[in-house]
Length: 256
Picture 1 (cartoon, rainbow, N blue to C red):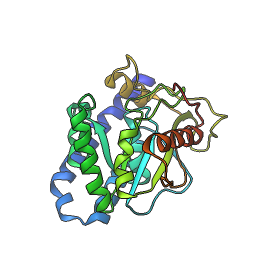
Picture 2 (picture 1 turned 120 degrees about the vertical axis):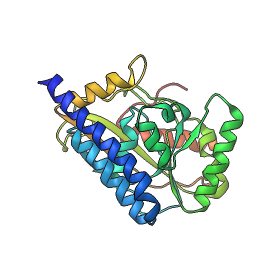
Picture 3 (picture 1 turned 180 degrees about the horizontal axis):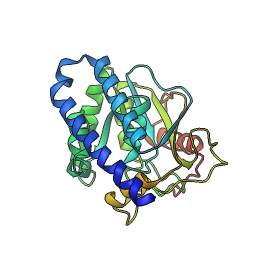
Picture 4 (picture 1 turned 45 degrees about the vertical axis):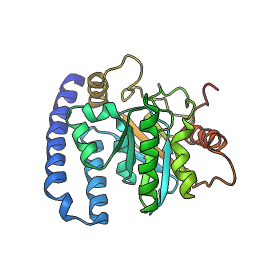
């Protein structure tokens, strides 16, 4: 049944992606900010429904900006999961722009892309992040800089917090987890679900196929409390936030 289930879901997902592109180009320009957020949330929830993924939300998501959201990074599905709860403007690696269909969608939704290997580009993105925070946006970043395998939270790139420092904006940590469950599995008790994993040698196509074939995937989005710098520099703040994200995701802190 898995191959058949995966095939049917991926066909439906492809159609949904195309509908999303049409919406971005036809309806988005006519919507106000609240209308765009509703459209993004509804579209993202439908992606999870098509994939048969059960969403569990813990904690309180933000209602308004300015705010910077930081989360651990496990999968291409992370952006969908966060947007299904609270739509954000994301900062993402430039490679995502080149993904089939998905890249066009996230670009049209206002994602800020960063060439991580270029230091000057990081400065450019921080400048744009500060502009958006001053405009009261809710931004989201994955400070690990890469996807992990779900066994722990990697060190945070502190430079991504600079925009929050210079604009005196709070940061809200989020822990993401993919579990075997149907919407009520408990962190720390349920087994980790590896289907959405997009790390190491796993390709996007492989991850999509495994996710579409899963029958008991639970997506847990665990929101922490907004945090302010309180006199800390960005490195100290990054370490404190990483520890909190790890706690929320029920994962250990990895590396130095």
